[in-house]
Picture (tube, rainbow, N blue to C red):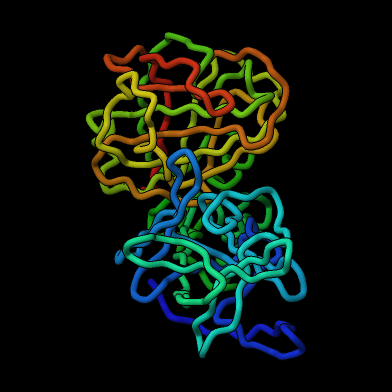
Length: 386
């Protein structure tokens, strides 16, 4: 659901106040951050990666992370643009890790529109403009204005998280008890067992989740449940002290039970307890037509997946278990699964269970370079909403 929004925020610019047409944030990773579609005219702006981060336009409002933008307060009179898929942008180019004076900034327009610019070392303003011939380009003159549409992300009910705070803990049990006693209104998230009742069975289900007796509540499909092991996928444990990205394509023929389902969890299976890597790993999903990498070095078609989960301080468990922050609707195509080390840790060898596949369906990158690819398909359990 989209809605055009104009929300009041006070910003001092040349000693005058301006009502911004969006709400700013100081932390784009916060769960309370407001996300927007960014538009020029009737076209939606999205960021994508084809070796470098670039921006483009479409008449369609997509629902993957590269279409979503927020606005970060960089100082008292500077606002930086942040793309949910690619981070901070500087005239369309990737810029990390924190905002600075050379990031794109916002200038008041007329009404709900605004201009995007940056200042060079001589304090000149260069405006970000767009036309059909040149695409995006910058100039001292402002020729294009921009608007936003707020994206209302629906509340996703994850069984067990009764309070919808992103955690399954004692607060969820207390909420269930209060609902059973009539002390607070019943919610959809409280019927964990999906039997139409809120009772002791739901409390027991939450307790089992907290104690780790069950991995999740929901329907599950396990793919590649073989006993073959491989030390490269879904992540190269020997290289988690550097920039490592692995990609695997699970064919649609294996995922027929997931068609039309909302995925909420993905679990990989190590041969033994994972070593204490101490790294952070990000998981992305994308439906694709390709069923293999075919040895090609050009994998730009695989970029731009939806970031669904991030594991922090990975290691010391019997699973590589991604609980989705962003549930993913699967349709009926091949599924590209990507893991990326976004904070490095210690290097320790780890093997994962899986099967040998008939095609080259996996690839690993180390420091941005393709080091090897193989036909190994990791064993994976997909959990979806019942």
